Structure formats: structure tokens, C-alpha cells
Image (cartoon, rainbow, N blue to C red):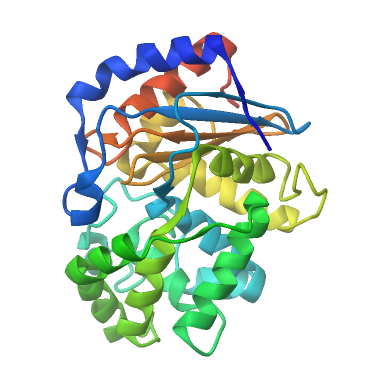
Length: 309
């Protein structure tokens, strides 16, 4: 599937790129520090199967926290919402994505939502399968179906880099284990979680997955219902309330669409029943969101009245 280059979109990309000088590429995961902060690409995938793009949409990047939405959808399908939300809450935190403080102070041991690291680790620990490789295989199959792209895989270099440096995530797992919320083997889950975050794709793949959510779980190309409507709705709601880390409230006011970011610089967004958006811009703001990606979405939202509110 080719994405048609669009001059109007290119104009907005050029405009948004001006803010990349204020951002920084994520360096706490060594393999991500090698990305170029000047990059910015976007694909807009419409529900009728047409697609517009600007920038280098073929460039691949790892999902990082965007994978939290996809893992949540899969685990909700495997266990049902009642069981999942017994272990993970549904409320925004207002804290950074890797903060441990609310685990101690609010409902001890139970993470507030699945979009922060503590909650995502619990969700990942619930994935079905008897081995870590079987679980990542299940998730990869699901992600490939969502993007309708069989070639999507895990970037081993980034996964290894994250596995070696994820000490705070390990600490959270052990803390939650103490409270009976986290019940799996910590190192097994760390292996799975770092691979989940290192699933690699391009902006077009990401836009297509966004479009699946825009269509309440139905694939725009195959017509297959990949995610039940109610689960797609739950995921979109989390994207609005918690998807942009502790900038989610401001993002909802300024831009007003369901979106999820990752520290590699990816953003998956969507406008219900219209299109999915995939963005890649590795320079991040202080909250961990793509600085040019957010500026681009601001420009698009202002010009095309994208807000769902």
C-alpha cells in the first residue's frame, strides 16, 4: 500500500520541524540516543483506504509506550475488562510515566492506569502463553494483523538496550509483587516488556493501526473485526485521558483527539470514523512526547477542526 505525498501536509511538517531545536532525543535507553532529532514524518490513513503522507514515512522506529495500547487491547480480549481492572486502575496520574510514588500512596501496589509503566507491566504480565517467546509471538501476530503487515518484528538491539537499563521498572514489579498485584516472574516479564516496547514499524503502519481504532476495531483494508467494539472504546478512552503522559489534559484541550506517544518519538492518533495518524519525530519535550509531533498535531487540529470535543 503506497501513501500519496501531500504538499499541504509537507507544509505543516516544515512548519512543525522548527521546534525540534527545543527538544532532545531520548538518551536513557542508549540505543534510542542514536536517532536524529531533526526527523519528522506523518501518514494519515483514511477509513476508505486512501493515504496521505509527508516526510520519510518509510523510516522505522520502535513503538515504546505506544505498545501499551496494543498490549492492553490483547489482554482485555484474553481476560475481559473485569479481571484486568481488578489489577490496574482507570484514573490519570498527573505524574511522569515512570513514577513510582502513587504505588505507595494511592491504593498501595495497584497502578492507577495501564498507560504508565507500572500499569503496563501488570498488563503485560497477564498476557497468555506458557513462555515469554510464545507471548511475544502472540502480541506480534496481533500487531501484524492490525497493521496488515507481516514483516513487522522486534528490534533486538533496542530490546537488549532497554532490558539492561530497566532498573526502575524492575523495582516497580517487585513492589507490586509485595502487594499481590504483580504475580508473574519479574525477569520473564521484563524480557517480554522490553521486546514489546521494541516492536518496530513505520508511520504508515502506525496510521493504519490508528485507523483500526477509529473504526472501533475493524480493519479498513480487510474489513475484519480485529478488536471487539467495547474494547476498542476502552483503549481510545485511555488514549484521551492518559495517552500523552502527564501532558494528557493539555493535549486534550489543545488538540482533542485520542493519541498515544512513545519515547522513540512516535505518536499514534485518530479521529473517530475518519482516519488514523502515524507520526515519527524523535526530538522529545520534557514530558517525553515528540515536540514536533505535538506541534504538527496542533497545526492540523487548528486548520481542520479535528477535536472530538
